[in-house]
Amino acid sequence: MNERPLSVPPTENSLRSIHVLDDRLSHYTVARSTSIASDLLHAAPQELQRFFQERPSRPDEDVCFPSTSPTATPGSPACLTPNSSTCKRRSMNPSILEHLNTRDPEKDVSMDIQEKKLSLYGDNHLHLTPLVFIDRFVYYHPEVGRRQARTLRELATDSWSLDTLFAKENYWLDVTCPTQAEMKTISQIFGIHALTAEDIMSQEIREKCDSFRDYLFVSYRAFVHDDVQLTPINFYNIVFRRHLLTVHFDQVPHVDYVLQRVHQLQDFITLVPEWINYALMDEITDSFAPLIQQIEQEVENLEDYVLHTTTTSADDQNMTICRIGMCRKRVVQLLRLLSSKSDVIRALIKRFEERSSFIDDSGSTSTLVKMPSSPSSEQDNKKCLFPVYGRIIPDVALYLGDVQDHIVTMLQNLNHFETALARSHSNYLAKISIELTQTSNATNQVIGRLTIFATVLVPMNLVTGLFGMNVKVPGKDYDNLIYFFWIVCSLAVFGIISFTMARQMKMF
Image (cartoon, rainbow, N blue to C red):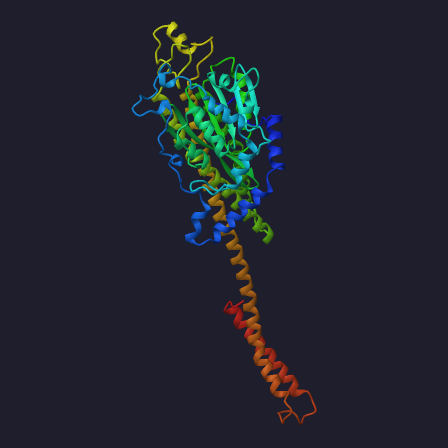
């Protein structure tokens, strides 16, 4: 699937960005998010509405507001061929460029922080606030290379304007933590549907693949480590026929890994947007493998410990129960993150097959180039495999099928781990219960023996108490030890007889 080993570290730039992001995270945002979560738990039902995103107050804020985009006019045909007029590149509106040049990004970010509310559809975890000192926009094209900047307008230089950059084919634009204003501008530039923009800004957590007129919208979940918690991070991939746009709300190393892989393969295959989208999904899927291997090792250790350990202390028992609980929690988190990915891959393959089976006259490929099952001639075979500059056009559906196989394997392994952990959990609890029962039985035996001793000694105490009273008792007038001898012998005989009968009755 992915030739890069899983243990390859991220690039120095990505690590530096992540460290800077961690070091400069706004304390105001953290405190405010904690306050919102606390107020949400204690709020009355009629007050819950104020914590969430408000309903649109103007027509143009509604997702159903009529679009003025020329490619979305009612009755226009769906974009099925690259040569179609609806598929031609959209030139950038000068007013949009002017709006980018006059906008203050720091002001947009501060306004976005103040207006941030909880999402009705998201996990409402603490997402990192967009910070202007992070290079949040990454542009890549084989001719231009990798370019990154804090804002969209800073991608342009004297030699490469935004209109020139976006006029190229098969480029990739990655956006991290866009503000509301930036997302609105991006939607105008690329003709993104209002429903797509709403899903992105509300951080829709459901993984899915939606087909729109000019693009495919793919929501695919990655994760970031937060101590023992795996915080889900959604990648929103908008796959156009001539370029790819990705949006996410946290700094993750997947983009750097994919760019490294793209750079290695750009001389051998035609890097169409669908393949870059596959490479990103493949990288996200591969990031689960080390965790699953770690869980597998932990499950094996726990099973051996539970089966072969005899007696343990209370501290060891508490630690083992916590280890099993944390391991099961991690398995449940991974199952939640992986459970819907297979459906997304299957839907994406279906969408590609629906929009496939052609190569346009300019030599660029469609979303998927179908390979002939039995080529009639070597010339036809070469036409399908090497249509452009001798490079291979990747059959994305086959690669996605391989990703789906990996996901199914991971899910099967996680289900097996969950079963094994449940069995180990119940076995260990049963083992502890047996130890407690054994301890209780031993305690009962000791108490039973003490009870027998007490039963035997009570009559003796009664006899000695009677002869010890300061009244006239038998034998008080005798100066010899005959009465004392007979009293002691009687008590000894009574004790021997009582213990013998108790032993025969198996009382101890």
